[in-house]
Image (cartoon, rainbow over all chains, first blue to last red; front, side, top):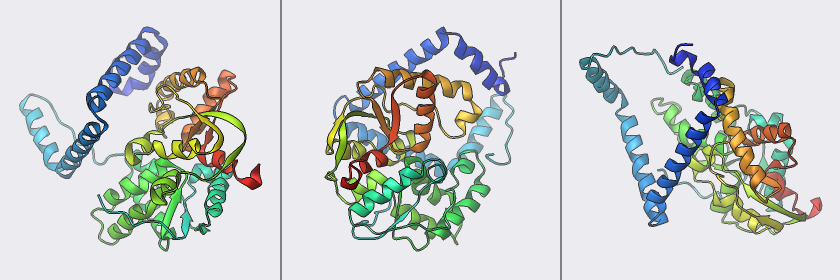
Length: 91
Length: 255
């Protein structure tokens, strides 16, 4: 089976049944998770909460400017040789 | 973020959610029992349906708006809306204002609904300022908590339910490893990606088996269904229960 997005569900089942893949993903996830917690909350709870607020604000800002940002991304991608296709809606 | 009006001294309209209405009516009854125990007047708008989250999460915004409008009509007279679900509460609180941002006829209604909607434990602890319900469970039991993703990440729910149970007689609260990691349900995710969903569930089940607690508590009936399905198929003696049901079992007339 080709390694393409449309085959994701079937390929995921193959990957899950290969014991080494879940083990590697689990280990990677736990390492990243642990480091994120210590980087955010290691010094103080307030420090972590401030970072969360900052990230939430960055997300809101990006969402407000999303149409412009998407067109910017399209332009840059096209300049780099990609073909950009637009979906009619989110469904 | 908008300042939220205090829910103190106001009647509550129960937003029971689809899954509680159809599969776990006892959870809805438990919410009513706890609120009435506190002397809160509880109403149930009969016109309520789904909040529209399944359609919204799949990208069907127009369809989600149609369903959300029915919710806004059904709860138009509500002063406070309380729901036994972090997920459905987050839909109203976070997504409704965005969904209707460009709709002058509905924007205000959506923002109002968002401002007066509370998840059950959040309403009690943050809204009413109650940390001790003076409850006693019929027998001693050890509990651990699973934090549902939407409640934890969109509403900041974590300590509210723990506080209420810690202050309940006969209840001991212990830790569940990786309690804030997804159980793998994720609504339609479980249907679209059953293999990945099940792999995530198995990790959750291993953590549940490893904890000292015999009962896991959560605030979302959908996570509960996912985890209990996994536990039952494994032949485990442990089960997940909704916080409202466990608290209601500590009411005097119940014991």
